[in-house]
Length: 355
Picture 1 (cartoon, helix red, strand yellow):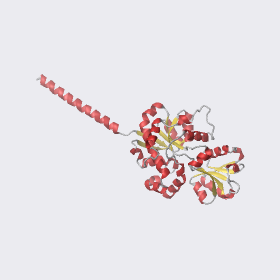
Picture 2: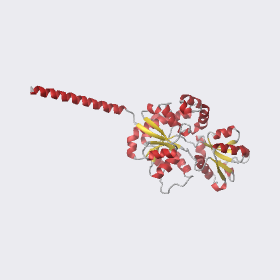
Picture 3: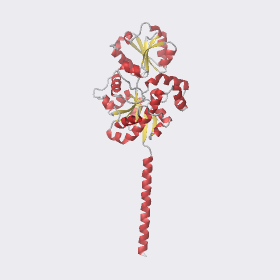
Picture 4: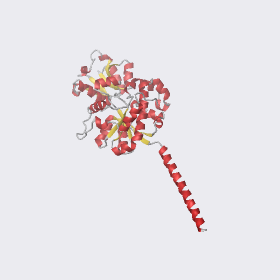
């Protein structure tokens, strides 16, 4: 009798053990099937052109298609996006290159660039229609009243860099800081001889006949020619700590693939077709969206790569602003993407599939 009970207990335990093992295997398999997750802090909304690729990738399901679950958290501004990264609230921040340096590197959190979203600053140097006969080149701005969107803005930094290249000191002209509509109005009246203007105000000033184009830095080729190389205004960055990068490598590679696919599509697809594909929540006012994308399409970085030459140019432009701490040692090499992202880009090839 006791032998029978023993055999029954043994069989029961074996069966239970097999069930537990099966449950464990199932749980592990289910966990393995779950895509990696990333929380991404975004410093601008859909209406801010340079941040559009990330919002579009989420709206089109491109992140999911590449095998990564991405949660976008909208930050109030690029500075807040970097703060979330620095505090560990996000694995990736979409922010300006300026904040990647001043808000991360200068505060003890080195970062590396995953994707460059733009390769041109998206601004133009316009000349008042009343001053076209007098101003035909950068050197002619010496002694003039020139408008900027605000101190420390990309437009201000770009203008400072342009003037340095033709050896014009800041004190040799009068800078006037104004909002976009006021810049257009003052150009039209001739109160400003020239201004560095952002979209949509560039297109409006040109359309109204208030100004003429002197330098179109919305186009990658012109930006590279006049600044010395590509300028990466907005980038996706990750903390540069090696253990974190190793653990995040699959998710970061998938994130990069998704964004690059969207950017290649944005750079080569007619603006109207892009608007038709994206959901209304992303497009907003369709006419304005098409006009903005059409004007800035040349600024998109289609392959998302931040090259060493482009990073050198970007750092040079950023240094034209408030002086960096003497202890800050950041070089293009230290900002370069992780190897997993390089491999992901190579795998996509020269013509990534549309999202």
